[in-house]
Length: 305
Figure 1 (cartoon, rainbow, N blue to C red):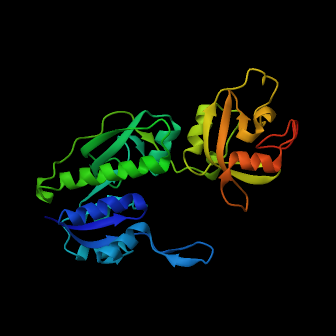
Figure 2: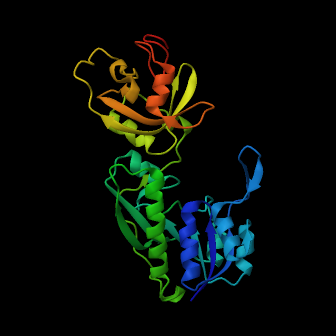
Figure 3: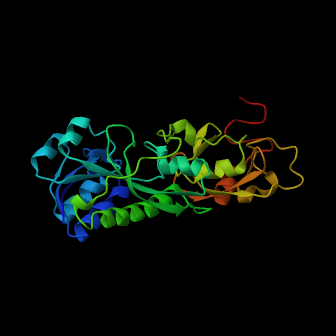
């Protein structure tokens, strides 16, 4: 078994941390992002990884400068959220569990970018960490099919579990038995962090594209000057008599189903959250607001800008 350092922050990194402990490895230090103020009360809350480490009785910290003095053989990085400097890697070699099939989707948002692109499959790579952005040689990989209706959260959860298994398998023989790894082959594609505007639903787009934005988990539009979050939706069949409707208009004939015209068909809203209110079924929202003929999402009445 190995003496390790662990670097990670979000919930997706927790399965790997727990798996290492269950496998009998000694985690000498867990480094995570600083506590942040969350919720209405603004109380300081630890990251998911830090919370799990405290539950497991593991020492925690926030300073990468503490790592050289703990006697670790290897650092394990899973969605840490910061670049590890080369000077530290020269002292403590590290491996990284990355949620994509490298070199496709290097960077901060590999799961979201794979989903937005409509990829039929993605996966997990275990790579040796370099100072470059996800450029290191690959020690192992697992391919994962993307479900037709899978959300980013659901896919991330599955990849986190697969990544934990891949990590434990690779370390079964100890750090000395880890292979050098194979160079990444193919054209790199970068997964930049998504901007808030990318979660805004553009009703001139295709229904399938809008559906994938909704499946990211933070989709939004506007109605009567207020933000409306779209929590769940699915592409539907456009009614044959709806040819005169413009994009973004709610189908008045099916108002209780929350059906919205898109660039190539319709998107059926299943669950929404109006600004300042709790999530609700889309049919309840449409019954309450009673969209007017020609009124649309994303803009005001027909012709308004």
